[in-house]
Length: 479
Ligand code: ABC
Ligand code: CA
Image (tube, rainbow, N blue to C red):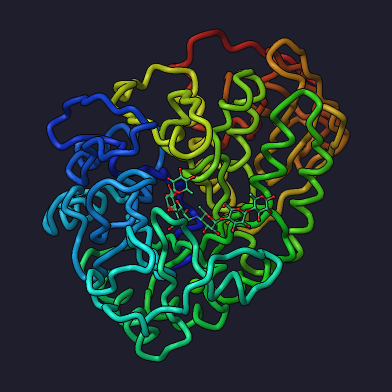
């Protein structure tokens, strides 16, 4: 699928080993053990109803190729990032036909498959590695000369030295070598066609020279979003010129800081968004926007204030990029750093009747309604008609999102003096189905409750059958 097609999507990121088992069993899974817990591609197929119920129409799964077997000082390779054989699948996750069935099951539902890929390195359990264990790069000459990455301000060091540690050195592929490069260009195209992949998430993009990526992207033939793990817009932005999209790490950091406490800075969030809007240029609408992932502490390991949580979770769905939600966030998981942030989802039973599951469902519904109501929604950059100490209004017509970090014990109030709504337009808060009426100049005045965000759309643009499911009442006020 193309970047334009992906822009309309919303992505559920899952760790294959931790999402669902083939037979629906619920084995114990202590994240600290760093072992394979039993999740499979067949398991994912079994639980697609759950993902689709929340309104997602794409999933991102863990890397699929064969990994280092057995125990290491850093645990087992249950996450899938420790490739040893580029040409074989990871049997812990299933067979070739299981993976093809997953693609088919998704496509039958109109959903997309995004596969995570790693081309920067291969993994060993000795230093130096036993290169004969690798396929196809079975010789030392296929890799950069060993050195650890020690200096993130030195781009050559970042690109040509090794990630990992003494327990699991990540042998850095010699992506300056034509044979290595040609292999990967061919490999990515075959992976795409063998498994009917709709998009790729590309690991460690900042660890390979920029000019490797355009031809890799072309050979992939579908949308690819790259991981550039860095909080600085000026560092990340140049990568938007070599790959379809980037994971928006700069926004991730400011989003977290803005809502992690009642004293977070909303202005700093506004500032990073505005600098991304100019620096990401034409790719602004195809970056991946996220609050959690497998490498960072879950938001609820920082704060469990449900007002703050609901605001932070709303951001990816109301902003300029493609929303990505990391599995388990909707179940309120609280795991901190790797490996604690990789809890088994089966332990919470895929329950739909939970506040954050409903929150996500409504956020997806709001975004989809905005897309359907306005052909320019996806190409309208967000603006900020109100930036206060604890309140923020985010406009992306026809969506107007009122955010706050007052926290669950606070009562937020927003007075937005002008919006793109015409006077008299009836608006509905998608999260509560409370209605409001825009005043002169499109002004909107809203008093919220329990520190929750208010996500407004013209009532005419929203399918109010969602409201019938909501517990609570529909009250009306005007401004
Ligand atoms: C294993 C163990 C861990 C143990 C670790 C040392 O080894 O499981 O418990 O702590 C995979 C596995 C991991 C595993 C690693 C290493 O392999 O998932 O569990 O950790 O064996 C990608 C993937 C990630 C994956 C790999 C490897 C790469 O998303 O899941 O990890 O294929 C760097 C890379 C980035 C990589 C990340 C883990 O490490 O760039 O591609 N992610 C700074 C650097 C970043 C660096 C980051 C974290 O630290 O600039 O390049 O990411 O180490 C901001 C700055 C940032 C800064 C952050 C910390 O602060 O702006 O630049 O990031 O303010
Ligand atoms: Ca490299």
